[in-house]
Length: 254
Image (tube, rainbow, N blue to C red; front, side, top):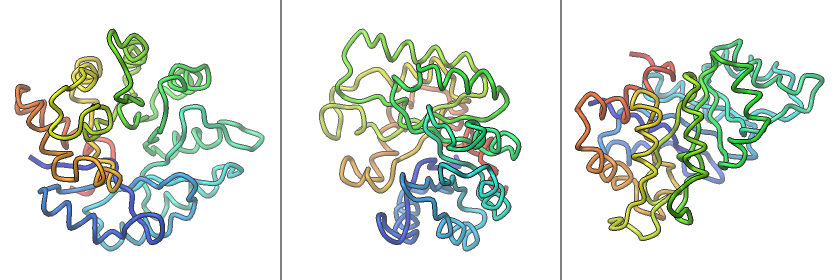
């Protein structure tokens, strides 16, 4: 099974360099990874460097300035970046508030969306989903699921109704993000299973959230635990969640 980690941060200042990520990937038998630019950083040159040094190993999502009309998105995309990171309620500070979303749609980029459930259910995101129906949009961090959520998970269930949009996908993080007790997570809330049932394995992708995951369950456990948790699924469904879904949209070289 080809395993793809769809949520990794790397850099030369706030986060560790790419060599640290590669070490963990090799230890966990992870074949490829998506580099997600961290909030507040619109300088994507390091990601470009990583893509060029390992062209078959990484894809990357950029962040651009709020006042960008789409020009810089085109420039970064020409250099190989395959996605952009936008909040669910993101609007450009330009004459066209949807300029960033529109550029992503035109360039066939993936949009990776950091969010809370409230922003996913807001009018701004509803406008995006109804305007850009062919744009691949990926909800990060299980839609903002966390260990404070309690049964019957009504707001989370309402968010899952967004699965009716076929161009919308979602990331499955390490379970330390939403389990109250630490690894080995003896009390597991049902959100991960609910997401797979709502979206189907073909629209769910695993993403470790490296390196923050290192202070929770650790990189290896962020993969091993969900692999074991979903071991009751068919081999094909597991392949989709842990690799094939990502490969289908992120433009990796074969």
